[in-house]
Length: 379
Image (cartoon, rainbow, N blue to C red; front, side):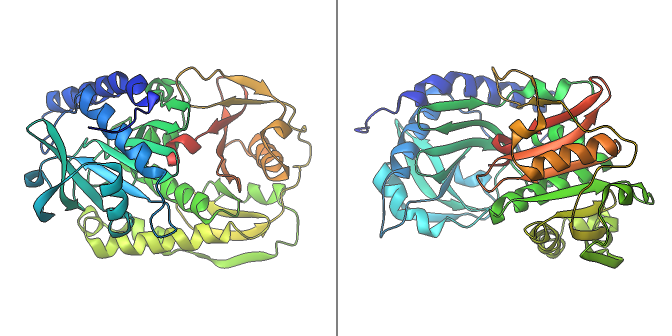
């Protein structure tokens, strides 16, 4: 393949192969079916290399956004297949990018003889299928789908130019790791708590996507203590609470498998996430009922000002640091950290305009606010 070498393609290929091999072997031991083929290091390296150079090619004044999946057509449900397979080259996939840039559509790749070829496109892929997504020029994300029931893929590695971030799967083993973070890391069994985490994952993704920054405070249902940390009057208090998300989540598993339910959930998530773009914080309870937006956070009477925050990022080699909360960002981050210190059974999700995303939660183990930097998991 006459394509220049992107150095990081070789750097991460062997590690990524090991990650997929471990996940697929564990899934087989559990008796899971419909598993994707295991990718080898040479194939992974070739896919990264071609995708990186394709990401830098401008076609009709647009840089390509592409998702490619490694699987044979027979594992893709009802795929769109080409009469003749296309060579997997930067030019070929850049020209195809406009056809597959919508979410959930992947160019299908498979090795025929000694060549990787594009055989068509797929919107259904098997569990643990190797997927590489081109986000923007020079920014690639390697990921897989945990299962058809989950709307968010699990990220394995993020490559941006000369930077490589390998997701630390051991991050979920922390004794007080929030369910939302462990869900993003692809850990934990299916349960009602993971269903809840998946909703908040989708809210986080949607908040980050609107690009305006925002804060979402999640408080316990039935409690009014959160009002002690909110300045009055609240500009946009909601009465009665907006319950579309709650009503969708109360529906049974049979309804949730239907496309109409998934589309309705996506619309409801976008409605709530869109409100976080308004100046101030949006409040929702842990049963997904919207309580208010545009709210201003203030110190709770009798509580100390937050002085230190533990910050971590679930990336291999990233160290846990204790920092002053203002080091994490501006007023939005500082007020979110204060809210969680004062309301310890709550969490706060904060999106920055530059794409950073932080989840604040109280850590009983460390006895301080824990800021989880999770933007690497949300790409």
